Image 1 (cartoon, rainbow, N blue to C red):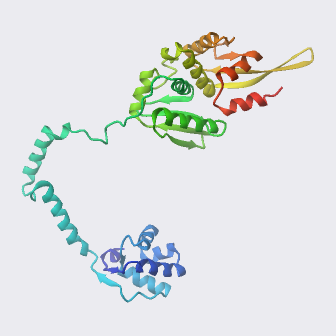
Image 2: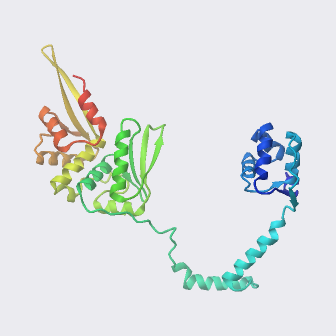
Image 3: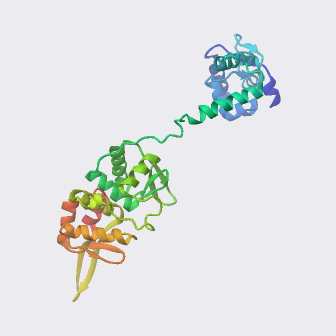
Length: 333
């Protein structure tokens, strides 16, 4: 390896180094070329792209192993011939920046410290500045997104995450991703966890975290904070309807209740919204009543039991999660 780095370099005319390696590659694999050249396969690919010149020893070895002649117009230069030129360029850059080559290291450090104390530490570095997001005005779409966040979403100091099942909610994930783009004009990242069987839709924007927190969404453990629907949504019928849709699309389910009376089976399609937050369950129950449904609340969920309520829920509130429609249509009777 040391011999390889200390050897001279073979300088091919433009295009010739690639052709030489293409001919060698017909006899030897990339792995074999790397082995004979005492380098990595990535280095071989870089040579083939003519990103770097090849060591003369490698050229001679490959020529011998593959029986490929070395082109006659190849020149040879010292391995470190570029260093003098690079040194001159570096010196020119220092002179351009400082006006001279620093001679006194202590003086240079003192000058830098003065600059830092007076100017440097007060300059804003764009790397550390939070990136802006669009902050839409209250709307039904924003209320629905808040419902989605209260259902399957979570907020940390720097990230907004919505976790959905990777197959059952796959179509719904597309809807949620498009909604985020439309509302906040940012493109979320989607990460698939095969082990957990979920897709995580993630936006890493501190400004978005701050904005959603201002809208009423908690940062951190939302259950411990006894989260609830924000007041700006509760007091508007359209916003409340959209928010409930977002909640049910994430933390709701449609199922068939079957029972037997006098040897005859009966089956009804019902809706259940489940949440560990008591204030949230109470609010959903109240809002459904205000929307003229007949909900039933338990210690775990809020339910719509009647056939009429189920039909009106799907017509008046609706769903953007196709799995709910499939379950409604295909519910076992």
